[in-house]
Image (cartoon, rainbow, N blue to C red):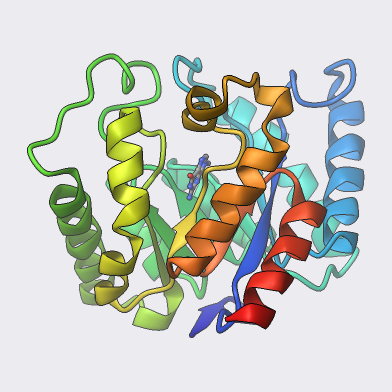
Length: 274
Ligand code: 9MG
C-alpha cells in the first residue's frame, strides 16, 4: 500500500516505523528553548540513522491529564525544529502531531508533509488546513480529551464505534478533496480506552483494514503495556517491541514508537517471515 504526503511516497507494503520527537520542556535537557531545539534536531537525525521512515514532531503532551499548551507556545516549540530539519534536507517526511489548524498550517508551510491529529480533524478549520495542502493525514480516534479521557471510558461496542468514527472522518476527507492515498487511520490506543478496550481493538486490527487506508498503531511505552507487565514507563522496551510486532502481523502499516532501532529490527524479521 502506498501513502502520498507532500513530495514523499511511502511504500507501506512492509511495515515501517514513525519515530517520536516530543518537543516539550520535560523531554530534553534543561528545558532552555535553544537547547530544546538543538536536542530535538539531534534526536531526529539519530532516529533517521536508526531507520525511522517518518518523524512525528509534537509540542503538546497527549498523555492522560496533560495540560494543554497555548497556541503561541506550541508554534514556538515545533516550527523551528521543522525548519531546521527541512534545512538539512532530511530524506524522510516530517509529521506534525497537533489538533490545532493554525499549527497544521504553519507546520505545512515550514515543510511538514503529514498531519497527525489525535482529534481526527474535528477541530474547526482542521479539515480545510489539510485539504488546502498536499500533506497526508493520520486520523486518530479518541474518546474525550487527554485531561479527562481515562476517567470513565465507555462504549457499547468499542470496535464498531471506533471503526464508524474512522469511516466517517475518512469520508469527510474524501469529500473535502483529500485523496484516499493521503489518508491513514489509527484506533488511538490509550485515548479514552480501558485495558479491555485496547485489547479488543488490538485483536480487531484486521477488521479496520476494510476501510482501505493504511493503519497507524501507537502502543509504544503506553500504560496498557505497564498494566500487562507491571513495568514503569522506562522499562517497557520489550513490551513495546512485542506490541509493534503483533500489530504489524495483524496488518498495521506504520508503528509510532520511541525505540526506533529495536522496532525496525523486529519488523525486518516480521517482513522476512511473512
Ligand atoms: C500523538 N500520539 C500519541 N499517541 C498516539 C497514537 O497512538 N497514535 C497517533 N496517531 N498519535 C499519537
